[in-house]
Image (cartoon, rainbow, N blue to C red; front, side):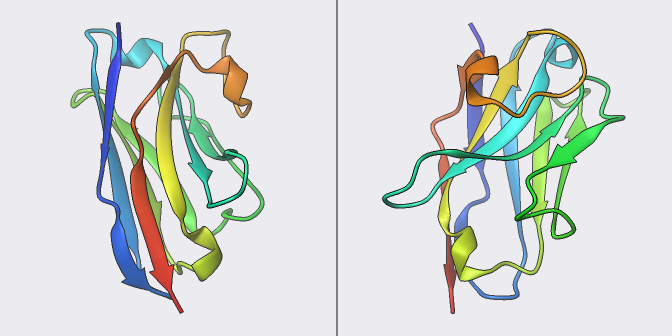
Amino acid sequence: QVQLVESGGGLVQAGDSLRLSCAASVRTFSSYIMGWFRQAPGKEREFVATISRTGDMTYYADSVRGRFTISRDNAKNTVYLQMNSLKPEDTAVYYCAASLRGRGLRSRQYDYDYWGQGTQVTISS
């Protein structure tokens, strides 16, 4: 069983930055493709970013590309999401997820096996 715990959410103003962290309680963190998703009020959960097992490949949703950066530290069993130039439309609960399936990157929710409880990010205008 894998437990994922997100942290770093909060209330900031438009244009500010936040860094989310997701700590995984697992012995073989480097075996997992990791991803970030978000769910805004009244909307379905959507893909944000994903990173390969070694961290050499990343992929982003169009809405965040150029503003968000996903990274990981396999020695610390942690994946990060650096969010810059935040906009009110980035307001959502952010979830990290872990996948054991296949190779490369995963952008579809059903490819992920484990999910965190989420952290709230609120951007005021």
